[in-house]
Length: 360
Image 1: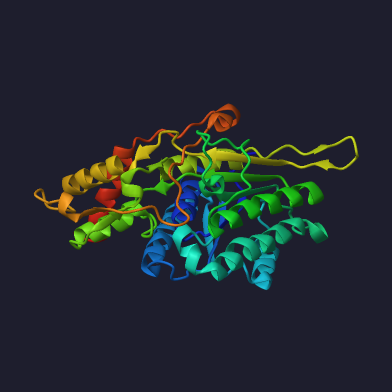
Image 2: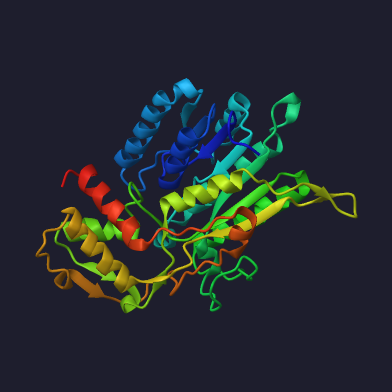
């Protein structure tokens, strides 16, 4: 399934992954029409989302000669009329759902926004996909949606496999992401909608989310504040660089699960779930050390910065897990791809972007 000359809906287009995916689609494919939707909420600085949108709009102008377009709609997926009007107008052939309320800790105190965005918003999107071919309109050929490594909870078996049982979420955020997988499976079975879920593992990189550890640590260190490292540093994360995530998503977009009919005469659900992670968990203390070194090298922090004086080891927080570790064998088998950007290289690119963006 080629992506050239396709109309592709990217939800959360002003978000971290959504913006980078939209950029890659415009850069690497001919005649593509990327339709983005984002609520532009203030979970973190709206100026960063506007920055990402500005880059997309400039890129679309430079790629106009190749027939590429970018259309943006400011709207909330939880508003069903907005979603219906969006599908009626643009008739997307591929839908990539990256819009969600993110963050494990935030979900503990703000559950309402997770139910609205991650459940009601996703349901509205599924309904729009279901009815996309009504009245002779173009039907959605592939729904790709973001899940999360958080669905694995405190799974003791590593690396995490998509064959593992994930019925014990330890945060509301994880529960909503697992619920999305179940909803997508039901719609794939009932309405024969090819759907692929992607469990992302700790995505990082330039122009990322300020609530993520690497970004928040940088802000605090630059301000001379103390950073807190949870579980006394005894946590490991499978950090995955943004370019690897985007490459994985685009490969998955091109290969929807095949439709088939079962012995009962009903559709066999065209449904898949994959991990996208680096498959190389890093200890948080090592991660912070590498980050501080790259921030000094980029000039964000001075050469004599006393990092040890700004570090505090604290207990584990509710909703957190000790380790994330992706089994990516199915991704390699089906798409010939495995994320492989080294952590130091990814943090170096982030540090250089941070220096330029904030004019340090």
